[in-house]
Image 1 (cartoon, rainbow, N blue to C red):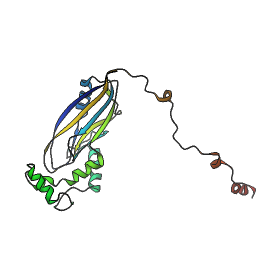
Image 2: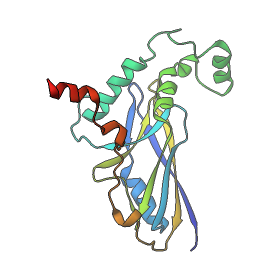
Image 3: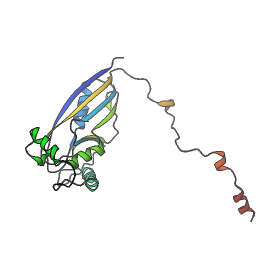
Image 4: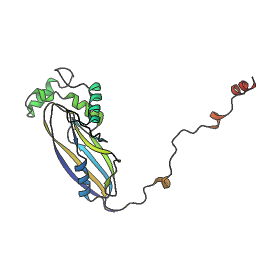
Length: 206
């Protein structure tokens, strides 16, 4: 059984002024197909610390912000937890040293570091997702889409997503554990817990 690794990069353009949700499902599926790997895993990883990768249902309806309803619902919740960076000193970050570092790295001004909300949101969501590949197909569920979220809305940004496909082009044996028997994970009561209690007997004798 030969183990293969196949890597590609997806280039994206975020719009700024509002977090951008990129549906990259088609591109990820094309990369999996191009890899020739039949059974393994696909890792989708953000190259940036203010971005996340999410697997979720496509809700189809779009609002005036070109966000799917489910995406805007998610953004509303995140804004309650982590408010948009709207005024200076709203968050501790960025401090003066970090702002200077940004200018040293070629940033056009301190305002590009006012993206603390994006950093915090990406911490909650994480920067990657891993999906199982079965028989050459992503096993993400019937309705799942892969989204790359750019939480940084300070300005329009060029973004990159790294996709790594790992596995084999060999067939695998049956995937069913214990012959596909459904496992009962509910707690089983002990004999002591179901035993007759004297308090119950006294009630019955009245």
